[in-house]
Picture 1: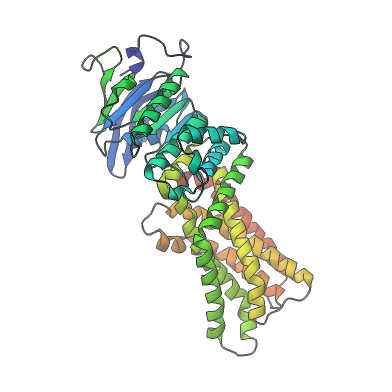
Picture 2: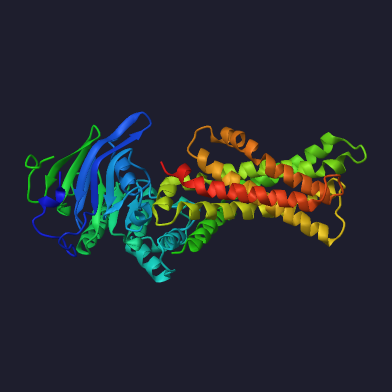
Amino acid sequence: MTLAAAQRTAPPGAAEGTAPAVSLRGVVRRMGRETVLRGIDLDVAPGRLVVLRGSNGSGKTTLLRLLGTRLRPHAGVARVFGHDLVRQADRVRARVGLLGAAGGSYPVLTGRENLRLALSLAGRSRDEGAVAGALERVGLLAAADKQVRFYSSGMKKRLGLARVLLVDADLWLLDEPYAALDEDGKRLVDVCLAEARSRGRTVILASHEQDRDHLAPDAVVELADGRLRLVSAAGRAAGEATA
Amino acid sequence: MSDVAAVLAVARKDLLQELRSRAATVATLFFTGTTLLMMAFALGREPGVLERSAPGVLWVALVFAGVTAAAQSFQADLEDGALDHLLSFPVSRAAVFLGKLLAAWAYLAALGLLLAPVATTLYGAPLEGAGAYLLLALTVVLGAFGFATIATFYAALTANLQAREALLPVLMFPVVVPIVLAAVRATESLLGGAAGPVGDWLLLLLGFDLIYFVVCTSLFHFVVDE
């Protein structure tokens, strides 16, 4: 399945012949005795928004963690922007931003400190203005100096989104970004995704949200029984996709 | 970012977490204080027994305190998937290990430097001269380094296991024996015991520190990468 073929027009900033943002060939990943990913093939061109669906336990988080270099494939070839996920993991990490389902912040640090840490680890110099800007963008400026352990689940998710915005990597991997958010928070995610696409960012988003058609993703794929199938792609309906 | 900056960022994060949560501090201070007192009572009041026991009791207290602290060192990283995010940044695994090691070393060294004079005084084994105090401080710092190296490595190894609090000491203790042995002998030598020149034991301690440092730093990525 080559999702890039489904898009008729090139996304902003994508040059002809650019390496795929994501290229998986026959990727297998086991968790214990269970094979969670069974020969995944996937190409995602730069600048695309791909929604990843699947039931609980289908392997969405596993796939995102693999793309974020937290897990290694047990078989197959996986590349991000042309870099091998295993042998060139450092180069992959320089271009990936991950938002896990739980938010990924340190509870005893404040929101502001968590973002400062993220900036440091992403190789950026200290920028209090950028940190404050990201917090304000997600509506957390008033709680910036409160420890994250006092945040609600929705606030933790917003802080995770702030981290992704601040780092602004080339590939965004978002695991249930709408979970725990109120309607304002969900609209915020939508706006951030639209802006990311306009800047040429590639987004792979795992979500159960059903009423997000206005996102107009370039493709919707579904994980089931460890295999990936194309549900729909921009300009092509389900059923026209070839594996 | 250079790895040095990453190391410092991770170390600062860990130390800040400990200063605020005091999760390990309260437990270790209470544990070590209790150990020193209980051992003093258990060893009795025979002349010389307490004095000769001081080096061993000090390092037993530090070892058990270190295990308690090590068990906590990765817990904050496991909450809310923070470790996944930490390891998804473009920072080498070695830098993450060194950052956590630096924080653990600072913590254990501070604990040891606080306990050492308390233990020597409590057990009637005073040091003679400023030079002896400096050498004792050096022994504590080197011993804490070796122990922190092993503790950080094994804490990462056992972090995701259900029985980690039981497994951690079981896995660690055989490996820390050379460090503890050299540190006890060096301390014994400083307190006037018949352990031989303190310099020999400090060199041995330094040698084991370097070996464990190189091995653990090199193997850390196998521990955290799945």
